Amino acid sequence: MSDVTQAFHRSQMIPAREPPRSQRGAWKWMHENLFSSIGNGVITVVTIAIVLYIVTLSLPWFLHSVWNAKSLTECRTIIHATWGENAGGACWAVIHQNWNLYVFGFYPIAQYWRPTLAFVLLLVALMPILFSHMPRKMIWFSAVYPALAYWLIWGGTFWIAVTIMLGFVAGWLALRVATRLANAPLGVAAAVLAAVLWWLFAAGPVASGLQHLVPIRLPFVASDKLGGFLLAFIVGMCAIGFSLPMGILLSLGRRSDMPLIKTTSVVFIEFIRGVPLITLLFTASFLLAYFLPPGTTFDLVLRVIIMVTLFSAAYIAEVIRGGLAAIPRGQFEAADALGLTYWQAQRLIIMPQALKISIPGIVSTFIGLFKDTTLVIIVGLLDPLMGITNAVRASTLWNGIYWEPYIFSGVIFFIFCFGMSRYSMYLEGKLKTDHR
Image (cartoon, rainbow, N blue to C red; front, side):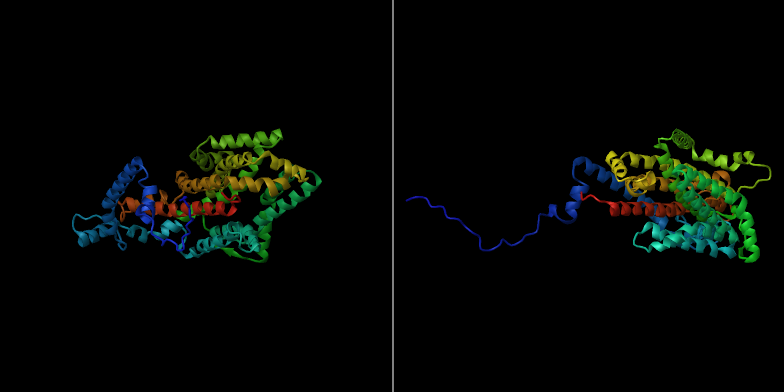
C-alpha cells in the first residue's frame, strides 16, 4: 500500500487571542523605553529615586502656598497658623502683589492699555507669518505693525510712525530704480542710503508738519519706565525680527565672490561672535556716548536692541551658511540653467531650501536670544528675572524672599521658549518632503 499525501485546508479561522503581557500596553512601553537592558534599568531606578526625593522635599512647600498677603511677614504668619509652627510654604503673594511690576515695569498705570493692545496686535501680525493658511493680505498689517507698536508703547506724535514706514518705502523705490539702472549690490546700497537719509533729514520735519495739520498724539513714555516682561518682549521680538533678514544677507555676503563684500561680512561675523554680549551692551550703554556729538541723545533701549540684533545676526548668518553649504551643487547649476538672476535663484530655489535645513539652528538661536534679554540689567534696565526681582526684594515688605520670584520668571521664560521649540518642530514636519 503506497503512502498518499492529502492536503488539508482549514475551514475555520483560529480565534484571535491577546498578545503576551510583555508585548502590549504599559508593560511593552516600559520594557522598550525603561528596562530594555540592565544599564537602562539601573538608570531608570536611580532617576525615579531622585525625582521622588525632590518631590518629597518640595511638594509640602508648594502645597503650603499663600496667594494673598501684603508682606512676607504676614505670609509666614498665615503659613504657621494654618500648617503648624515649623511648616514652610511658598509665598506666591509676592507675585500677586507685584504683578503689574513684573509685566509692565514702571510703565504708567493709566497707560497699561497701550502695551496690552500692542501685544494683542502682535499676535495678529504674527498669524500670516507663522501659519500659511491665514489670508495673505494680512501680511500688510504685519509690515506696518512695528511702527504702530513703537507709537503705542512710546507714544508721541502718530506721524513719526508714519514717517518711519515712509523711510522703508523710500528705500524700496531706490532699490527698484538702482537695480534696473545698475545691478543688485548697488541697488541694496542705494536702498540703505535712501532710507537713512530720509530718517535723518526728512522724517522729523514731515512728521511735525503733519502733526500741525492733523494732531494725533499719545502721552510720551520714557524708556526708563519700561521693565519686566514688557521690556523682554520688546528687545527679544525686535531682535528676532530684524536679525533674521540681516543674518540672511550676511550669510550671502560671506559666500559672495566680491572681495569687499565677503571681507566685510567675514570681519563683522567673526568680530561679533568673538565678543561677549555683555561687552557689546556695555559699549552700547557707556562707550557709544563718547563717539556721539555733544548733546546728542540716543535712546538706551534702542541702543540695546541694535546691539542684540547685531549679535544675533552674526550667529544666524553662520547657521544659514551651514544650510547653504548643505545644498547640492546641482541646485545652483539648475538655477543657472533656467536663466535666473542671482536674486531670483536665491529667492525661488536656494534660500527656501537653506532656511528649511536651518530651522532647528535658527530657532535655537532665537531661544537663546530671548533668554539673553535678562542681560540688559547690566546697563541699568529692569529685566523681569533680575531687575524687577531685585527691586521687589529690596522692599521692606518682601525683604528675605528668594525662590518664588525666580521660579515665576523661570516658568514664564520656559513657556515662551518651549512654545518656540514646538513651533519649530511643527514647521519642520510641515515642510518635510521625504517619506522616511
